[in-house]
Image (cartoon, rainbow, N blue to C red; front, side, top):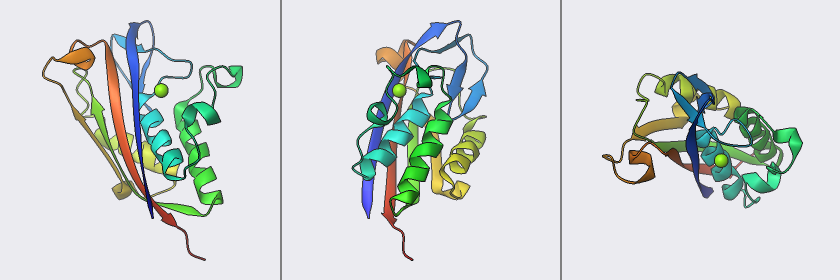
Length: 159
Ligand code: MG
């Protein structure tokens, strides 16, 4: 078995859609990035690649490559999950934490879990999503951006 950890941050800006965990979330600001800047999906993808010791998101999907401009990050996660399976690994479990002040994530958590689980090809019970604020402290507290942490456990697939 292997564990992997992923961490990502994206800054808020006006005039961009907010996409977190593959879900479009109504908000007055979105996140800046080359792709859709889906901070949670990026952290989770990095955790999987890290568990495989296969580099990171930037190596697989360079932000200098126009092919990934505006990319839907959930598709990059699907790609990483396929790479994992093709390399003989199986995802046992994944858990994530979003760090942001607003908007509140509670009503989106279940659809994020379902969306991420579908991209990963695993049961929804194998994917955790939760969110926390930082009590107004730091960049997340000042609503300058969003951070996300992800951990995964993978094992060698048998047969
Ligand atoms: Mg990112």
